View 1: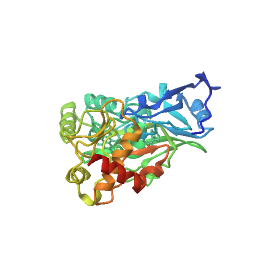
View 2 (view 1 turned 120 degrees about the vertical axis):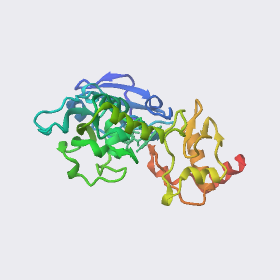
View 3 (view 1 turned 180 degrees about the horizontal axis):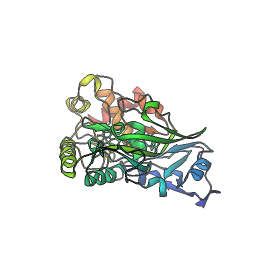
View 4 (view 1 turned 90 degrees about the horizontal axis):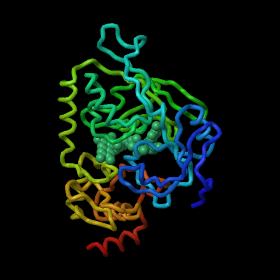
Length: 318
Ligand SMILES: Cc1cc2nc3c(=O)[nH]c(=O)nc-3n(C[C@H](O)[C@H](O)[C@H](O)COP(=O)(O)OP(=O)(O)OC[C@H]3O[C@@H](n4cnc5c(N)ncnc54)[C@H](O)[C@@H]3O)c2cc1C
């Protein structure tokens, strides 16, 4: 890989902290080699970071990052861009007291803590996203959600950094839909204002419990979530289970015995281990499966390994 790293950690011209770090520590799978990580805490630092090829990393909960890392700068929102102001904005909130529009919530804010804080305040609209280990920016970019609700249920305004500059838009300006915000790749969700309904902590908690209960069968180990989308309404996990692959291990990665659509890191797994399992699943399940994860650096790998490699792994694992 042709990475052009500075040899030492440094502070950029505008004051961003830049460190060469293993990306494994920023992903829920705990896998990923090194990259130059730019911790940006304001718009000026962000503009500087975006002046060379970059990627934006959120909670790392939908990523399988190569063991070699990535050659681009990896931007992490920090400081004020990872803080939240949930105070109702008097100019934007409904006069009847029902509709609340909050102050700015940074793209780098962890979603689980935000959902808990909203529950305590008795503010409804985002409780369906409980249990999604994302950052706000990543969850908005994917329109993450469950059958109980999704991010766009609670968005009023979005601030987005684009190569052409900063834009403030509303959801109506985007062609958003199921697990898709319509925001182009590498445009960065820097902050949002939330649009919420006044409820009570008890009612919000009851809805959260419903969404949480649906997760009970999921493994508790390090994982990037579901591996494959459900093809044509059939559970991908069921298909993988029926192919006899539950509990299959390659290196230190395992197809979870609790739920076959989850690959978990037993400790010390590599991206290569995970790719081998993904390719094995594709080879053994007779229905074409579309990957849920994003693969860094090369999303082209979504197509899987060459057939010859898969045949070899298949044979070894029989
Ligand atoms: C245990 C577990 C359970 C999960 N359950 C669900 C679920 O119920 N529903 C669901 O939808 N998903 C679920 N996921 C998947 C994942 O949490 C979501 O896809 C989430 O939206 C990823 O957000 P992130 O911040 O972690 O983004 P990352 O994984 O860091 O990045 C994913 C993509 O978002 C981009 N991105 C990140 N931050 C920003 C930003 N600020 N601006 C623009 N783009 C950005 C990245 O560049 C990348 O392209 C689950 C994952 C795990 C591990």
